[in-house]
Length: 77
Image 1: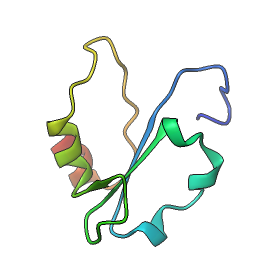
Image 2 (image 1 turned 45 degrees about the horizontal axis):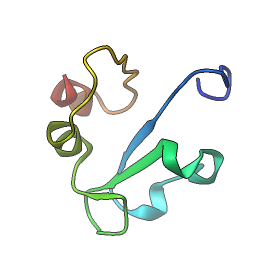
Image 3 (image 1 turned 90 degrees about the vertical axis):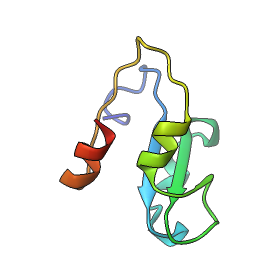
Image 4 (image 1 turned 135 degrees about the horizontal axis):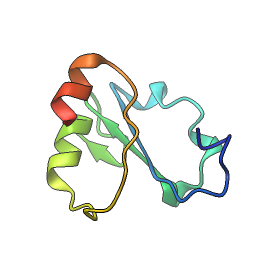
């Protein structure tokens, strides 16, 4: 989506088990990409993506595009 609409303001929050799963990380500007690692401490956030969401204050007018495991999406809601 980001590659198709390069003019949009975006921030990718990528949840993975360990940093080796953070594929295509280099395709995004570092300030627009946060990796959450649940099984190592090498990401920007050590823990599940859903925990990162709970601990982060977001602007109420933001839109989110969720992609991934159904359970993660349910937990994120």
